[in-house]
Amino acid sequence: MKKDIFKVGNQILKSRLIVGTGKYKNFKETAEAVKASGASMVTVAVRRVNILDKKKPLLTNFLNPKTIKYLPNTAGCFNANESLRTLRLAREMGGWKMVKLEVLGDKKTLYPDMIETLKATKVLVKEGFKVLVYCSDDPLLAKELEYLGASAVMPLASPIGSGQGIQNKINLSMIIKNAKIPIIIDAGIGTASDATVSMELGCDGVLVNSAIAKAKNPVLMAESFKNAVISGRQSFLAGRMEKLNFANASSPLKGLI
Amino acid sequence: MAKIQLNGRKLELNSKYSISSLLKKYKINDKKIAVELNGKIISRNKYKLIYIKNKDKIEIVHFIGGG
Image (cartoon, rainbow over all chains, first blue to last red; front, side, top):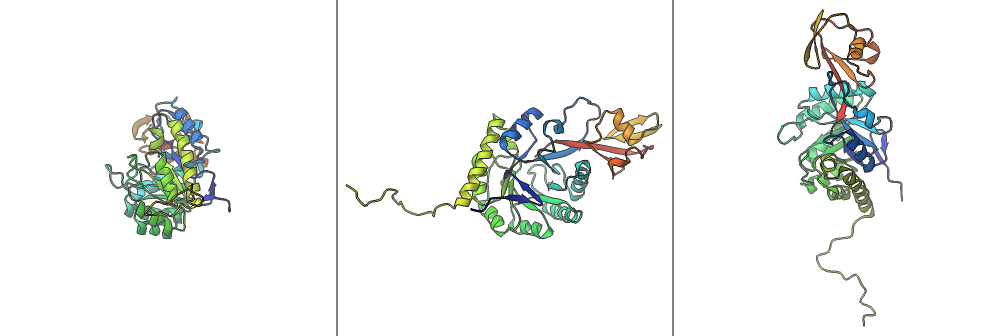
């Protein structure tokens, strides 16, 4: 069998699980969970330095950007301009060209504003960014993002941080089948089996934050996700059996006494 | 004296500061941040060359945990 490689933009990622680094108790727990997850890329946010607190621990001291890839995101941005500003600053910080674009449209649902998302994608691609785009599960808009030059499309499973799991398998399947670029299911994944199902649908990767960070034991949950993603991918590659409407005995009838 | 805004906070600087010396004053490692001056990103090799003026708006950002 051909080697199963996960390539996004110009990067080969060792794991199909990408994890977020928000919502943890502290950076130590973040680092332990990331390690247990086996992820080779993590999302990070760009925020103001707290100039008054000189002793504040830094994320970069716990997760070395030289050994784990940082994927800067635009969480908290509500229009194209805010997100462009954020990602240009991120690029200045460490030369990050691969970024996650997330333009939110509404505070209550954190649903993506697709009009602003399309606008920002166009500009970022032109500026040489490799853009992974958080988006709605609309198959036509997902394809439009691909046409605009997105490096990956990241449709939501359900609202960000809701833990509601996959709500629209049909749309996600359509997006996956139509795509020529990686599809990474992002947002709303609640537990490991959601990640397995996502991978069985044929998506290329999964992005998980809250389901790990908000678990009672985040480090153990991180490991569970690692296995779930591997398992789902293997299951997809193996090809599931056909579904039948009636029973089909597992033991042969020949030689029955 | 320069009245400036740093990360949304109003400040008065008594002596002349370059971006580089301002970062030193707040003990900020210049390799782990990005600086925006009046809406424009300043590249790291210019921190020593650019001096802060009255009414400047400065943003210093870094990476934190996020999804």
